[in-house]
Image 1 (spheres, protein in one colour):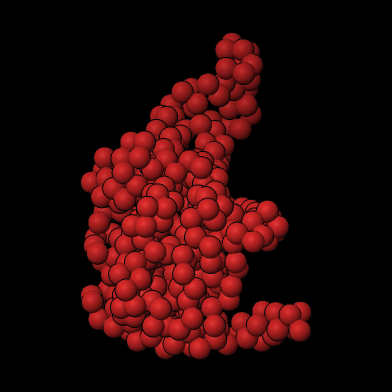
Image 2 (image 1 turned 180 degrees about the vertical axis):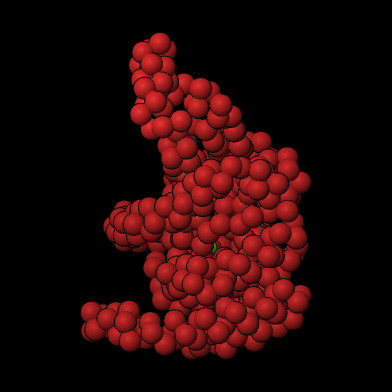
Length: 362
Ligand code: CA
């Protein structure tokens, strides 16, 4: 067929079928795919649950409705901490959570979320995409039939809410605290007992004295949970969570079954969610910190952890993180990769952000 006859026949087809109908068969041929995404957050957490909703909206927009994701808050279709297993088993196609919640399944998962005295969110994202971190995360989750993607970053965090002042590391002894991940292992080492209370239950646990202290995220999200009404002392900095990056998890069979363009859309929508979340988190925390200082003046004390405590925490963290790496072959590899990369970006960070922050603080 020559180009001329092809154009001639196409023109005839348009004339016969009527303009606008020409592309209809292509549209009809695209199957519509529907996923479910339970999260580990209550609906009241607008930044976290909002990130899942934003991700779903981006996927729907970019795919022109070919892939839609129905997001459900914690407890709506399953308990908060049931999402990993449900997605692994294919009960749901996706979930949003935090990888350090799954350390009992595989200790290596802790490094993919955050590490005490580790990297900030930019460093974490650099490790995932430029330092081989995401490849290791994919390998770790493949054993569970899952595909991970970094979601929104919520860090650096605050050290948490305490009913009593913390004056020395000895004050952590006997303390019942809600604190996940490697930071929780550090508190255990100091003689504290650690629980992994889901977000929606922290307020009640503190209020009833089931726990003595709890960290959650930072001023904005902590205010949303009402934690300022349960404990007087709000400590910083969040030594245990400097780079917390939340996760999207996809059932591997469901993800692999997507047409290539939809897989790309899912990946890019996750990256876009990260990019939109950083400014939202930054701006909302600044506003919430101001509210804590003014509206809650006299009721809440915002305190820095004393230098000697932070020095001890740093020393113990290094020991704990090294020992946690011995819990599995995968944890050993992830620890090595993370530590090597942090040494590299940390050196650059001292010349760039470190020097700059010291300058403007002075
Ligand atoms: Ca936290």
